[in-house]
Length: 526
Ligand SMILES: O=P(O)(O)OC[C@H]1O[C@H](OP(=O)(O)OP(=O)(O)O)[C@H](O)[C@@H]1O
Ligand SMILES: Nc1ncnc2[nH]cnc12
Image 1 (cartoon, protein in one colour):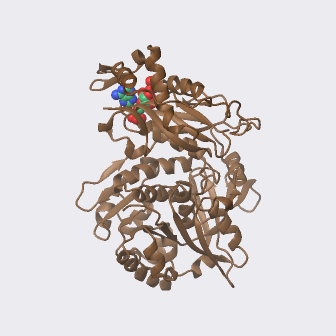
Image 2 (cartoon, helix red, strand yellow):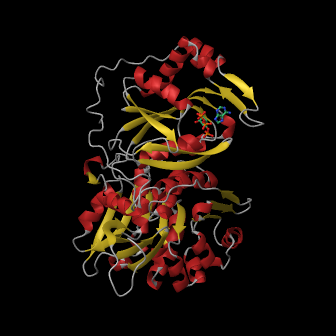
């Protein structure tokens, strides 16, 4: 599948979430102090919001109660989503009460107006204009909507769309019956159940066996397994288990939707099912580390609907929930943080000139290869001889910065070797420096993410006070498996920044890191 300008079409539930975080165990027959926050949700709408925040073109079709259309439209448009939301004259907007108990959630669901939306509203013109179609199980609760869904999927296939379905609820699958659901989604390309849903659909607890059974119905299945990662199965291929990074869970609400969006966005960029699942893991990890079911609205300026953005910016509801659920290190946000406008020296910046090919070649020759470090079998690329040479050091700093002239506000470096390059680059580029540190080193509130690299696992953290929309140029020395950079990109986006670009000295192409990171400017490749 290729993206182009054709949007991913998402149709389904858009509702109001009422999220309840009790201060302790719920005490029947008396009060339990709780933090209660209202926010916009719905699985399909959340997927659309995450897709928009990831930069994909996305069109959402949904239905709410009379008078609620503008509010829900604005909240999705803030993420760059084209939101086609109509109003039901009779039914109120759907509501779900989410009771958060550690990493367990219970949902008390009243679908309301969302249940009066038929997938049949999508006409051929809309299908022809789209690149993919995503549906959630909430659209299949009622018999009449199942009939319409079953008719829509072949029409979408005939229009050339990739169809993905998230079953959304093990409880509802049990209510409607596994076979009924599977009959409804016939023709789907990729099914995205979680472990409980896969079990509800197949009776198999083991994801491998569940996937095997589901492959009888659909050509690809991606089963999310919470902290245990993801199981990816495609017809005719060996199933693959992908581990998940260990993340500090602030709020699990919407992580499955973030996963679905990460998966769809990667497919939109042309990734195969396994690579898309890897990228989705990174997006879902980001969602787990923050409160609320949707991304931070200011994270990435929406392309088409920039003027409409701003609703939900700063996400007060998410901050209240974070306070109730406990972020990594509670503390105050600093108000005096620098913004692109206040940062000194921006206007005086001297243009960086690209270094000559000869200077770069000389610099490259100074990178040493140390066999079997830090573990047997690893050819370690040692940049210290290059750093020790003033001309080579200057040449690579200019080479890292030159393509990004004028596009970034700060340079972020990843501990430890990334610091050496990023600090020099920040000075040369007249920009500030943001350190992305290994776990436990940053003194103020920080977001954190775990990841795997070529020879170890690690955790990186970043202070959570960058100004919304700050354009961050990420710099590191080596791109190997891509775990480090993908984790850093996720952190920046999660904290409301925009990744203006990513640059490394050296890319080890055989390790395929780009599949995780997307485009990276690599000065040297081996
Ligand atoms: O693409 P990946 O597989 O994630 O690997 C790349 C990372 O590996 C190294 O960091 P490392 O954590 O080894 O250590 P450092 O502290 O010496 O920079 C390197 O500096 C990159 O950050
Ligand atoms: N082979 C390698 N050499 C230096 N740094 C690395 N980071 C990950 N793999 C590496």
